[in-house]
Image (cartoon, rainbow, N blue to C red; front, side, top):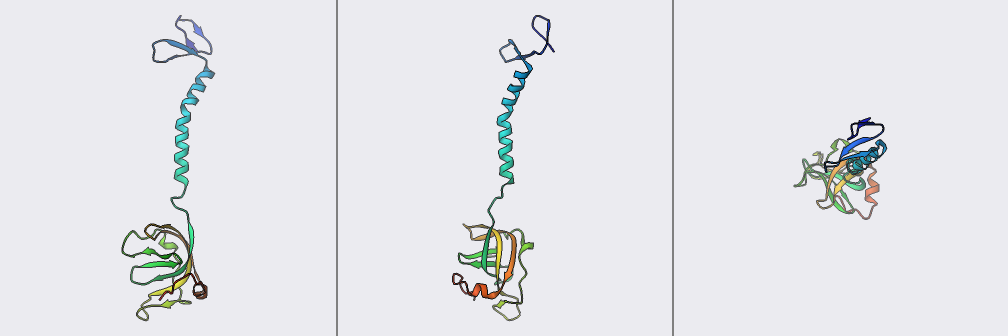
Length: 161
């Protein structure tokens, strides 16, 4: 309940000053519509922000090929599109999710360099996020070592040697 300009109480009416110095009588139902309409743009912006925040920054992709450590501190995956650096490689940050890379396997391991140095390659598939411009893996989601024959039989892969 509110008081009108005549000083009499009126039921179901709210007074609103619209900035012109004149009192205007607005029914409570109409006042609710005005408030709801003024909130819509704000709620729309909040919803868009939440949707944008929940979307992944990059789409995960599965890449298969030669997975190796050619030098200390370097890890890479070589597939039909070239070398994808995971760590090292001279520029850029190491990929996130390194705890998800598969461990090198003795079975199907191709040693390179000095025997016993642990340098070499396995065949693997990794689910990753990449930066195509820099040809780097930015996040490792998962990975698995595959039989060596799978990479050897894939004619689109270069030799790991």
